[in-house]
Length: 327
Image (cartoon, rainbow, N blue to C red; front, side, top):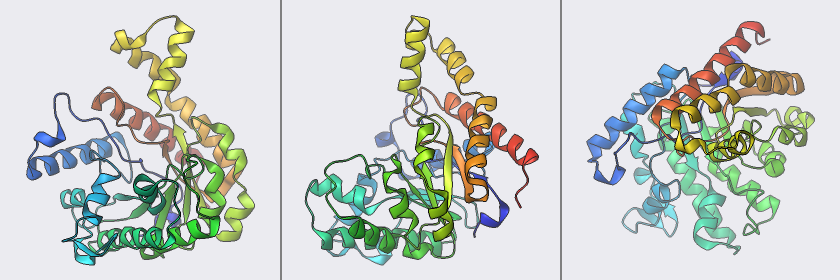
């Protein structure tokens, strides 16, 4: 279910605030799935074309708990195919446009083994990730796949070579051949390594909070590898945004949430997001294929504020799509 032929599409990264007073640990399985359905509906109402199932669970444990369970494993760190299920997808109807995010093999490895270099375990984890993606695709519940690798380029504990990382990403993304598969990075340093992985078609960069990151992406590499860019156009680092506003305004906006919301959305308006999207398109042209917020919204104060950010982003994308038709 490729979206590339349809031009630039709008997706989100995943995490989202819980409703006030709700704790995941207090919910039954059915109650949790109802919450996932509700947030997916909120994201769609806000205008997200391909929403990610909300990541209310820890991005490491939601996969490692399954992978490390001896009753569900084929061998250490290799989950059995029939057990590679993502619970959140039980809240998704077959055929819906959903972005399926699986924590990448390097991220999973570093969380358990730190600054070590057991390539065989890395590759077992990569195969486990592949099995989660293969199962999601077989259920026809995945129109866009994503490998979440935020530590690449930032974590000094990663001591694998570029070739070893590329091999792990290739194993993990193998089920995604022929469809849109993103890698979500917090640093552009591994953008080229990721672009050279056959199963990865879209490299995601946090370019709203770090516009200089786009200067580190070589369009010629994207063309050479027939890969594309996902550019962030909405900042999600609300603590950094509010810290800058507090300094500028000489106040603590967290003591006045209505004013915090007012000031945040002055800084993150549809017009400002549209300008970011225009700059990315000017630089990358038809190599720009996806856009949306930089990262997840789990740290935002409320679901209402998170939905408003997504709605502003949607307005910017609609404006762009009306003015710049894909070729």
